[in-house]
Image (cartoon, one colour):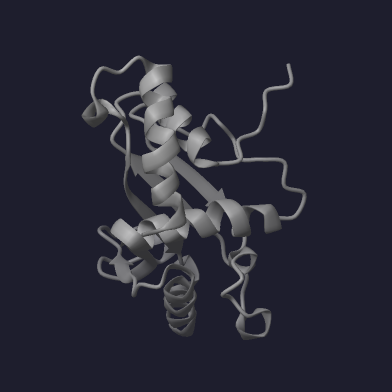
Amino acid sequence: MSRLKERYQKEVVPGLIKDLGLKNVMQCPRVMKVVVNIGVGDALDNGKLLDESVRDLTKITGQKPIINKSKRNIANFKLRVGSAVGTSVTLRGYKMWSFLDRLMNVALPRVRDFRGVSPNSFDGRGNYTLGITEQLVFPEIDYDEVSKIRGLEVTIVTSSQDDESGRELLRKLGMPFKEDNR
């Protein structure tokens, strides 16, 4: 069992039940899945960049990503239907907990001038999206193998119905949110 999942079951669930005033353990918000994606618009000109982003995402998540294809033509971007525009991975279970643990405790503190992540990046339904500007913050990525620094997006999907309970869940799990200094 993952260290973070164990902490969720032993510390976070009882804390959330108390703080949110829940009557049942099953009402407690939980992390359903984590989606990690890299947009590779440059792959239209150079197909090798797509292979590199697949390799990087595989190293970061431990799972082979799918290739996302364009759904419509956009002439201004020279985009055709079916062109590869990105890669994404959906993590569940043990790999999800392991990735979240590495993200919060290893990767985010390695971001240059890191002061915490924005507490306002929720979508209204308790899901949190976080953008990371470079894939080099993950220790699995070797700097010498990277030809182009690429950003990635991490979406944490929770079972909570509102932003406040989702924010409280991630805060108790250890997500380093910025403190409001107003």
